[in-house]
Amino acid sequence: MTPAPQTALKSRSPRALPRALWQSVAAEWVRVWSVRSTWWCSACAFVLTVLAAATLALGAANATEAVREGVDTRITASEAVVSATSFAQFALVALAMLTVTSEYASGGIRVTLQATPVRGMVLAAKALVVAPVMVLAGVLTGAVATAAVYALLSIDVFGGLVVLPPGEVVGDLLATGGYYALIGVMTVGAGAAMRSAAGTLSVMFMLLMGLPLLLIMTGSQVAVDVSLRMPMFAGLAFMDSTDNLTGAPIPYSAGEGLGWLLAWTAATLATGWAVLRHRDA
Image (cartoon, rainbow, N blue to C red; front, side, top):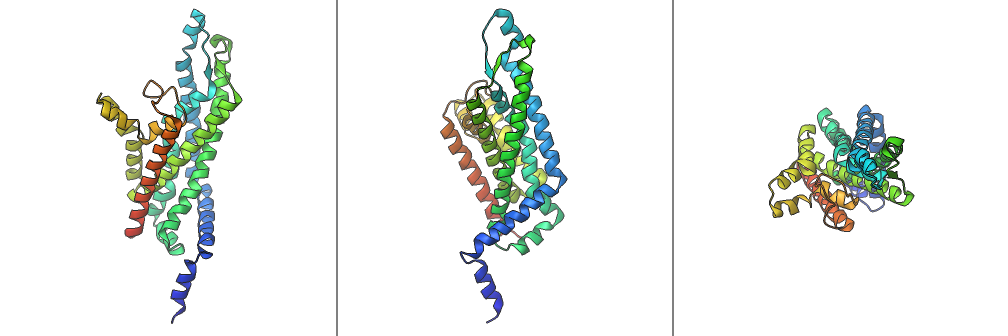
């Protein structure tokens, strides 16, 4: 008997697998923060969130007309941040995508798979790193955007039409971070399945915005119901959005929205795992 099979068996033992996973996660964590694309994508997400939130807040408040007519209109500053996820999410999708597709582009995936032969562990490590990075990006950019919206709508010309209830703000920011985390993991699965940046970005755009909006444009109630169960609108329901691309609150609960979002994430990640397992790098 050669020692190689014994080593392979040991690497799959219950004690060795968690250690190997931890090592893979640590390596992915260092890789993510050591490349410039992470910082560029995060910066783009920050700028998009602030600009989109401020623009949507102004539109939602309709402040000048409300003040003129004496209407007591109040909006929660963080609600505009929730609505802004529809636009800012693609910067973070790019960040998550590059954790997978950049390795295929450079050929580094071969080294990764040699270092961690259990391919499911490679995918799991990427997902476990991307998720907290997305939460961090969502909460921090959302907090700054919320402060910007509050400062903007607090000036005299808008009559102080904005409120900042701590409980709602914290809930909105955490929900935003959770949504970005699931979208990031979904992107990891799509990246493993498509292997190219162009293919992954196309799939994620169609899943998040392209296909849902096309279905809504058909005017068919069945098509609209299907579109509202796709990832972006499910995420808006989970975040309890009242101002979104449908023009009205999502017609089901936050819990159901989370369920649909988890289902889409699991399906996409499972597809990526199946492709990674059965195709050569």
